Image 1 (cartoon, helix red, strand yellow):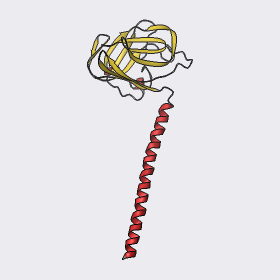
Image 2 (cartoon, one colour; image 1 turned 180 degrees about the vertical axis):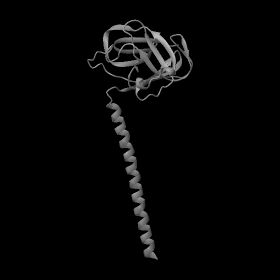
Image 3 (cartoon, one colour; image 1 turned 60 degrees about the vertical axis):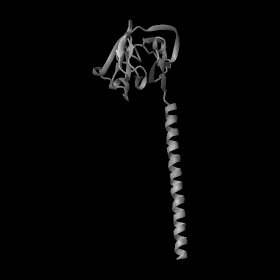
Image 4 (cartoon, helix red, strand yellow; image 1 turned 90 degrees about the vertical axis):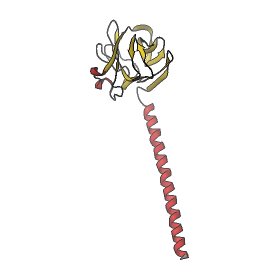
Length: 188
């Protein structure tokens, strides 16, 4: 009987050790996967940017991929004129509004919206908010029938060039900059 008890206790101790060890390995594997995911994010040629804050006292968020110029000709070439552009890189750029706001004087309800633009060789550009905000491949999945807002915004061409695309919450609301472009979108 004593021998059986000793064997049973030994088996329980070994199985407990193996169980704890496999849990530790599982946790280590999860942490490794997280680290690999983080390092993949760092290796993106167009890093993911998230900007959040308030515009006129209302919460606002924008998320986008930030491509670099890399010596390329952007306007009319990499980013064609008169064609819908995802206004960033990789997945679609999106904005999130917590309250009703006005963009270029037009009302928009709270929600998440993908942000697109139609660059033009001269004159105002078209800025679009689309109800399909979670688009994996940006403008390749864009469908005009889901547009909830289209406004015209006049670009400003600056003397200095900015290497990486940025979309910032600043006066007059949201400002897109890339290369020599400054596209100020009025939001209230």
